Amino acid sequence: MRIEQQPSYVLHSRPYRETSLLLECLTRDHGRIGGVARGVRGEKSRLQRAQLEPFQPLALDLMARGELATLVGVEGVGAPQRLSGEAGLAHRIEGRKNAENEGNARSPSEQRRK
Figure 1 (spheres, rainbow, N blue to C red):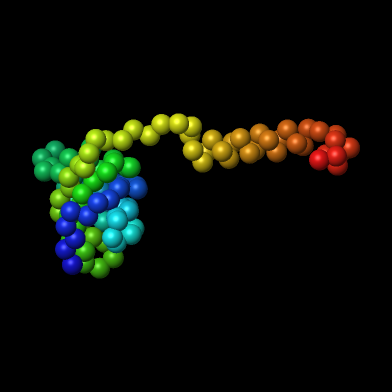
Figure 2: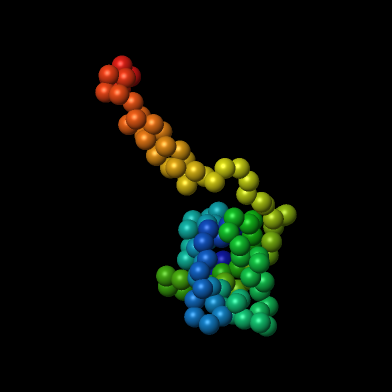
């Protein structure tokens, strides 16, 4: 099945073999799709690896056969977005640990009053 110009985002990528990448993409119509971008890490790649950075709006062309789709084409949609703000989940977990440690430092009578 060929999927053309599907609005999507790359969630995660990791190296695969000599010149390829394994991708996890989130698409509008097909949900989460695993795929292979063949040859993008090679010197003579026709697809630019920089376009496959996480959380950039893309239009993907995929050939889906079996569990992994093959990336046929990619096109950037709009300007690249820059993530900003706090460090997300890691920051929240660290803050929760600090709050728990502060709670443990109180005396038992102070903890009962809460």
